[in-house]
Length: 251
Length: 229
Image 1: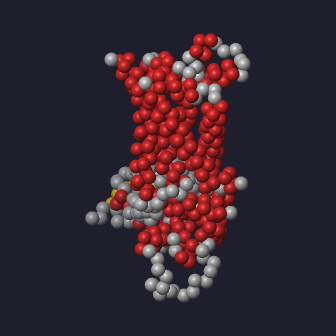
Image 2 (image 1 turned 90 degrees about the horizontal axis):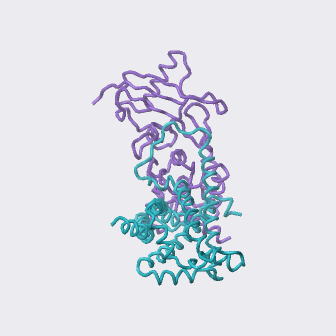
Image 3 (image 1 turned 60 degrees about the horizontal axis):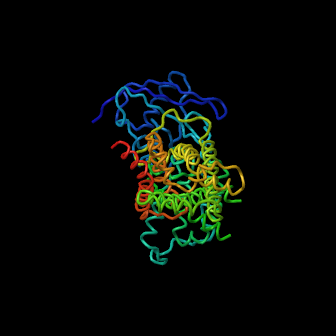
């Protein structure tokens, strides 16, 4: 059932990485509750352009919850208050008439703001570059039954692989830790025979890069798991700890 | 050195020192519980843990355990604060599944440490320290020396004052909260967890913390009730 609501938006505006940012309040009337959150921001930006004001910069790409490009800290939750959804899947029907919605960029030492609500998540790419791949040539797509893999491991690896690298885990973590991301990326390979070969070197390289980039230390609060749009379990973090510690003890 | 330089290495130290302190608490709690059963047996344990070489070695190892746990906690918290960045969120909401204790481990730790200073002053300084000073040849009050191994006397002395009983109960509740997160978190950081064991590890953590705290808290509660009735 479509209806319209009037909302106020408290949006973080910041011209460039170095300048000091601040909140601006925008009023937006007659927003259809069938709009997605990003469509609502598009409407606001069109309005701002017509008023000859600077539109709000925000990240987005596929708008169907699989690319991990959208971000936004909405009313105290990364990707908004809905569980297991990205910002692009959040709809205006989740807000009520007259509500003031606070929109902030991801905040973490390792995710500097580029402009307004856009942050540089290149740190995650650097962690992947440090070891989130398989070096050996694994050939073409093998026959499904050629290498036996237990259903449990296949499922766990698949669950870990659903991480879209959006950064919500590090953004919501009170310690600014990227452990859930790194754990997912280490697990998806460590659980499968092709990835297991370089498991020890990978865990060491990726954790070292994560620490170097200024992410914090995990204290197992579980906030990351609760906010993850893909509901990646923190049990992967235990696996990462295990992989890393056994690699270090082997040295 | 990866035990200082890497985040998982630092957490390993945090976990191991934490597990060590939990083992100490199990020992201390069991020992305390004896006082409710028999004052004489309790005093025997107190004598056993006076200024003997093995008790002194134990005390030193224990002190190192505490210091390592506290120093690493401060270092990790400082780093984590820095990792959050300079600007903090205007609005933050805590998720339902996140335990309160897990987000307040440092605060709980500071509360525990504060009460621990009181506890050391009230008991350790009147008991083992008196014996150590005596052995080292310092002047020691004769009265204090006579009660140095009389743990049951000191327990009665302090806990017959309801204020101290209540303070100790507050302390133990903070310790309980710290342990409910600490025990499972330590196992998790050591890598001893997976999706099947996650709920089990959390239940084990809650049960173990509750048993430890019940052993401790039974004493101030017993004295509080005796005082009231």
